[in-house]
Image (tube, rainbow over all chains, first blue to last red; front, side, top):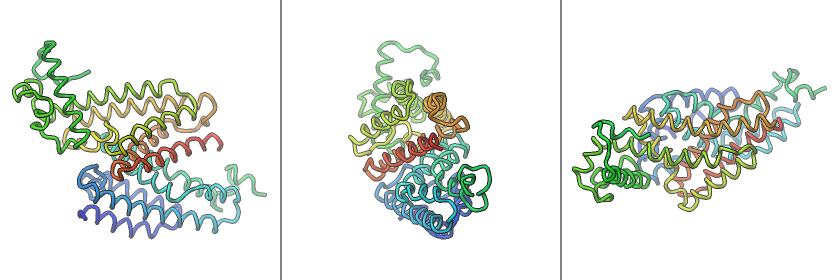
Length: 157
Length: 208
């Protein structure tokens, strides 16, 4: 396997394993955006649509799996950890970890292309905002935010 | 719209224009199928049947030819997207747009991706002019998507606080990333999934 593919997978495997809540997910996202926006970084090279297809297919499959495991873990912990917001639970139960991982990977891939041609991280961030939206909703339902003006908070007694 | 012949400042004769168009058409097909990097000027000569001196009469070199291909592909894609999106004002209409793109890509098992996106992922950093041209074309395409989302918002299907530009860019990234995943996997499924997930999010905002 090409070195930039192996390098990205090694780092993603280590970093994603530590993502256990919304704040850590936000930290992962900030780091990945920074890596992708660094010219010639392993991330920037790995997301180029060039080189050997079977190798890239294997790389993308494994990255998607790592993301799916993380999404699944976040959904599980969110659904068991927060007993206050019933509607938050159903919302999360609707989220399919595998499909969400496909969207996140597509957002990284397509967003990085748009950001490279504009030389601006804005498109990549817009892409990730959309792909990670279920977790923004999960954060809004956290105990720290209930009781604020969110519709779910106001439903609590 | 094309600028590639401005380097010699001459107007093309009808025959010259025909030769140039033949070169650009051959280069467009080759770059779409083989990729920009793997396409040589010799390949273009062989595929178009023009002579080396004819090719250099129209293009300084490969960069100039790549820019002409970007103009050509961009014009085609924007025309197609304007026809597909220009009057869409419902989520259903947006799904029909999605169906057409996925269906067309499925015919080739997703093998070649988006003509414009493939160019963007290959030529971006070594040629600033090509990058800027691509950036303008993607802005134009995203503007068509933003137009649809704005009409949804005006019709009450999206809340007033939804950020239209951000959603349009996010949707475009999901589409382009989906094309790339499909191309690598030789399977259109990840493209369909990525767009569906993005559209589901946009639709969920209306129920917020």
